[in-house]
Length: 204
Image (cartoon, rainbow, N blue to C red; front, side, top):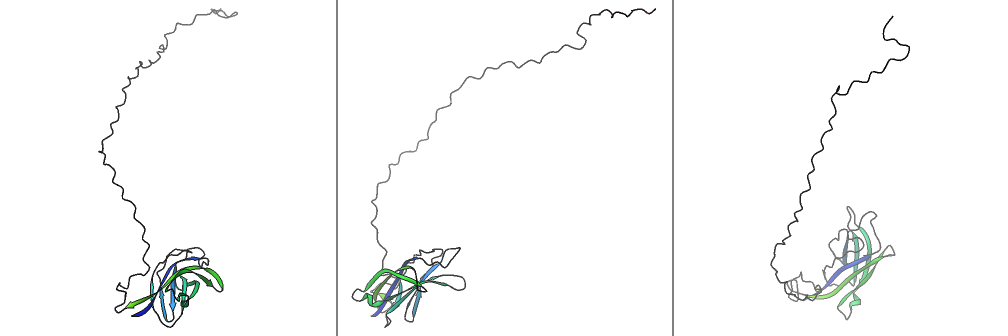
């Protein structure tokens, strides 16, 4: 049997933000002596990443666990915050899970929730007969919901709509007749008025 340590970075609540115009892509790096492992990157998680991963370390004489939260960037990653955990805090318990305070350049940078558990690894790289991929922190099991009977299958009948009421056709009035104007010259000739005074109808 070989003694091992299972470290589970769960999530973080960060107050230090390394980005200005976009959201951070945080990942967690755990170091124990010369051993170093990291979680996956939570892309665009910003200040609230959630990893919930299990990292397995060989138990050695080192007693300080270093947890660093990094921002995945192109070229060079940025440190968001760092926390330390002395394994002596697990004395007599064998397991630990709580929030650890992160700091950056002497200032608070948020908190990271970490679970730590001692485990015995049998020959072949198994935890008590389970494959190495087995996590000692199984996800919580929620009770199932009661199964309700299926709804009664009513036959689908086409909906019959009533026919629209037949209204009588509107009364057709005769079209307007064009106005008949009299033809030119149909009016009687004007009455011949007598010539004005001083005019003679006949020349001298």
